[in-house]
Length: 81
Image 1: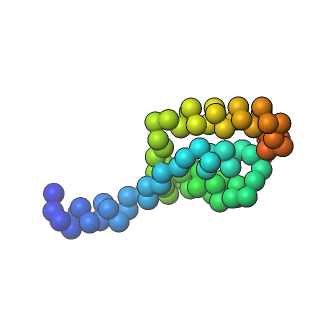
Image 2 (image 1 turned 180 degrees about the horizontal axis):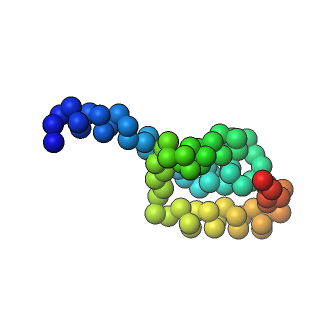
Image 3 (image 1 turned 45 degrees about the vertical axis):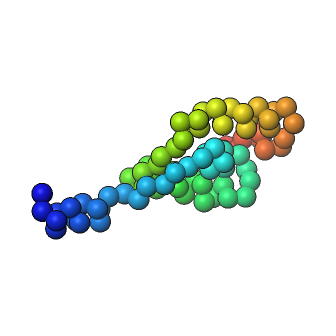
């Protein structure tokens, strides 16, 4: 593979973003940054970005939702889109 073709592939590769639980939750719970978080996932659906997440993401999400439920947080009024 030539150097030129490698450079071209890199130019067209989707940007990689690492998302954590807070970004995922912002897509579903009404709070500051929700619009930006939704845009990240929209870009993923359009193959503009590649999303990476820590292996512990499911546990982080579960813990955050549990804390919201226990504390009676109004954040659990899930967004209806």
